[in-house]
Image 1 (cartoon, helix red, strand yellow):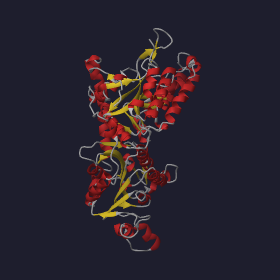
Image 2 (image 1 turned 120 degrees about the vertical axis):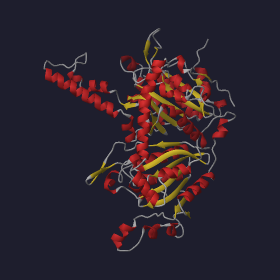
Image 3 (image 1 turned 180 degrees about the vertical axis):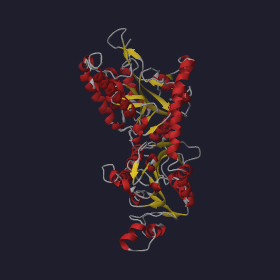
Image 4 (image 1 turned 135 degrees about the vertical axis):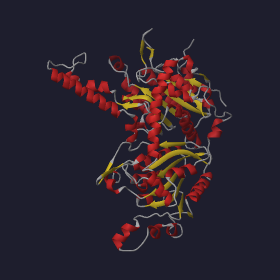
Length: 579
């Protein structure tokens, strides 16, 4: 395998964190992680024990039980969109209802040694109905399958739209009908789709599995455009839904399904057998002689590396040292744009590009001895990221963006240097990327910096966040000051002689600041699906192993150079200062 000049990075945590800082950081993050785990369990329980009992009384498994039986033994389940609709209540007559996880479980897991996307209706939540937000969550999971070219599995148990809220999930551009367009795009892209139908499969729920390459039905499952109740009302016929669209009809007569199986267990086994027939993973070939190896420093230490105050610095390279195999990393263009670190390491034995924001202060490139704040985008760093991203794309290397960004530099110097133009170049590079990109919001994700570093509007395949990430145009205090600027003096104090007026201005600023702080909460972003999943820092290494291997799994879908002919080598040589 071609030489890639990786070098050890990072150090023992005792070398850069004293006991006091470690304990402070750990207490802060542990509180956030405990809350995260509690909320995950709340979503996972669906509508609760009584509804789980009802599913079991019908002789069926829950979505989570099906997913657990489907995956390989001990394979991780990386859920997507866990907090879709978090905190949202839907009115129905005299009571309000919640739809935990938007009533559908989406995940990436491993089946028959292949990474797959699984989409499973949560049959404990209104019989697997589609709520506002459910179509978008399903479509997002389907798009991940398209982008990574990995199989998509549907575990269907869906009674169609949740009708009291149909106006919010039926007609729009990404409404329920768009799911079927994604089915078609997956088929057009040659991505295997396999469906198991386990129970109710009404209206749109009936359409979803049909375009799949294989469709299995259990003996108590049915697929119908309209259920028995509707037909009885419209046509005065005494029928059951099984009579109308059970396996007798769709396996033996219509051909809309391929095979019938007795129960959930048999259906899951059949799906696993189908996955074994799909193309095997290309990841072992791309590893070459290199096996997966753990970092030299435990990824669990990421749970105490980040300070409670988002304005305080930490060492980005220490984070990388806990993500890449053996803590070996090749930093590209280290002497330019020092507010940014770009480079390549292995994750699970597979080459991966990284871009991250350097925190604290960094040297000013034109003023000897001068420093300026890190976590900000300046001209050299932007140019470095653009060139690096283009090279990763040309070489076929997956690229991970580790965001902790306060935004672009501002002021006369920034405008004179043409940051708008350089930023546009970076946005163009990300917008035209064909190699897989993944984005992680480590902490701050602010302003146009969030866009420029491959935020969700630039189609990373997955966007993750920590439970203490902050996603907004600007910080609450800054925004409050801007909103009330016409009433403030140069010291940002209220301009008034009236004590009551001063009080009103300060209260108004406080209200804006608090509202923005609430909006920045990652659960707010995840609820409206601006974040794919919230994870603890120590879970990041496992997530990256999954995503990177899934990115290398498909074969023939994109250019994948061997390292001997990487553009990155040319970029590195040209960026090395001459002696």
